[in-house]
Image 1 (cartoon, rainbow, N blue to C red):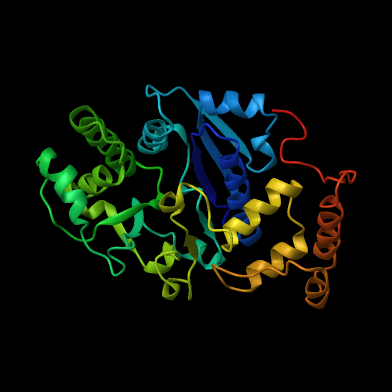
Image 2 (cartoon, helix red, strand yellow; image 1 turned 180 degrees about the vertical axis):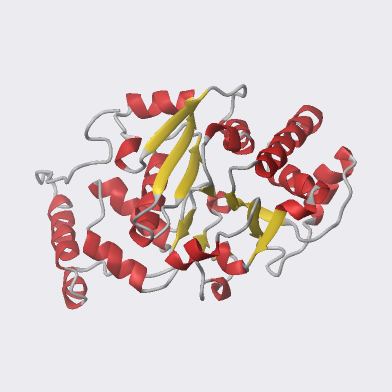
Length: 318
């Protein structure tokens, strides 16, 4: 099986975001265990991880720390995203931290020769379409031609390591810098689409299964290769009942996810699901270790109970 290189980026001022990254990486690795995971972060995020005792290497194989010229996490993350091609060697599949691979079939589909991405679908344009608000507030003042289709989502994209790919990504960063200078807006997707509009042969339009916006509608769940939760719509926090949200909460509280529970959750083939939160239902599902942890949670809820924590995410230092 092909060893897939998966790229994440992380710029944050809160430790909670580390748990979301951990959950995303754990879920994806359970689906494609032969992958290599790389996380690109800015210096301030690296210092935060060290001061909080968080080891990103517990969740990803390699961490790359990059100096960024911007102050806020949003601008830093977009800077890292538009320069990501220059920080990595080899082909990679980029995933936002709210996107998880749920079907290994995606590995067989990465046969484009430059850049692969899916049409953007969101709560306003679930069937795809050029976002009018982006046209009004970014394309129009930048004097970029619009509307056009396909307008693709940059939260999940495959990128080859060749001259064409480097050229399109370089142009992406150049256009984003122009946008930041003129409009002071951090959004990276308009510039990505503008770069692809200038070089349409660079894009392989991937099918909807490649980037399924499962928070937009339940119809995107069926047959999906990658669930994309769009947590930015919810202040950067995954929905509690989502596969990502449940896993994030378990990692935050217990430090790790029992493999049996992880397999059970993924086998449900649901983006939103209900995990047994009582001891007897967990036992009935055969989730014995999960039932034991529910018992420990119950014991800890008693006043003055001694804590019996498992290994926390930040247990071994930076």
